[in-house]
Length: 110
Image (cartoon, rainbow, N blue to C red; front, side):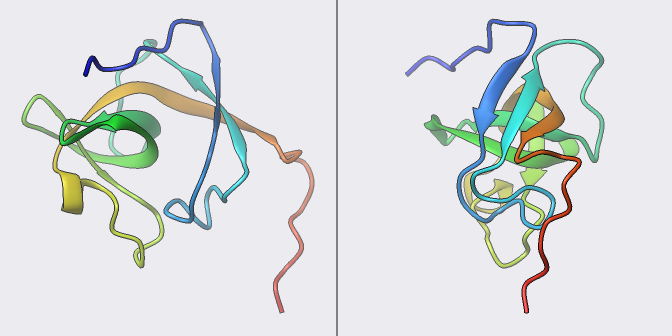
């Protein structure tokens, strides 16, 4: 299966699942920029694991590895990242969260 490509200057991506919590939560919408400056460790990226080319993921770049990137989720309880699938090919960097409104403070859970 061919690796998907992001074709626009900015592409909207919907976050699903808890792996990037608390940084990003299920239902957040982000803008992704393909190209631009090179990916650096700590960047939040959209990528495809080589072992799971059908799965588009939002993860944090940890380090370059095997011609791709080692990725981790921010939620240590969820291991659907490079620990399970190995290196990934980065398609773009997350540059902004636009939904829900980034200016609104999220209510605290009690």
